[in-house]
Image 1 (cartoon, rainbow, N blue to C red):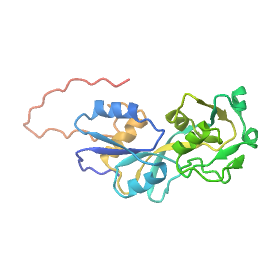
Image 2 (cartoon, rainbow, N blue to C red):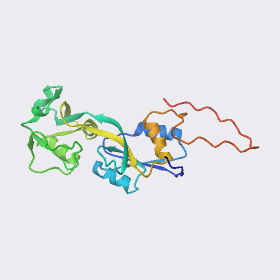
Image 3 (spheres, rainbow, N blue to C red):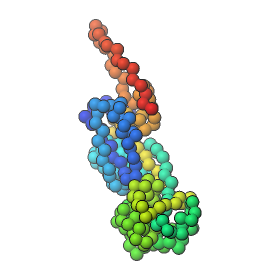
Image 4 (cartoon, rainbow, N blue to C red):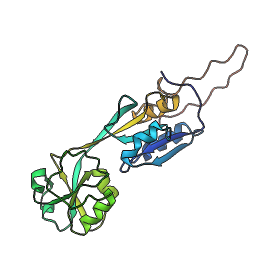
Length: 225
């Protein structure tokens, strides 16, 4: 059951690699009187931000604690290996984990693939962040496996990537605290699920006018493309 309280804004957290631009645009078209405030947070910190009240909802990477957070899976990303442009792996359009057995595979501390044990040979130390790992790839120290969106986020002219067909994948979901399913959260759920502006779900219907009150017909609103 959704809450009915009105909030002056809607706070949306999102993790690196996620691009909420399309949904933000639709929100601004449908609810211009409710500012949508975006905050980027590290993937590992996103659940804590939601549970701590730092955001009303978040675009996060699964898994999350389903006993405390609700989640609607949105999509699953392809995993790629980031390599120098002159690397031998570039000869193929896609590779397998076994093809990387002789490579030093960097395993940053903010890894989102959830490896039990990454393929290849481990580096002497784990890079602190994915950005640090990308710098090491550019220096010829190893290769890096990440979701496609993170490879694009950290794009460099001297690096490229190839799909890894049998690597773990990362899924993105819309999540919010179980005890904070508000009308605004439902509005955003409607947007990410592609509901039209006239859908009976999502925003609450306007109250009927009291007896004796005059009403003015509102202009029809077109459903955003």
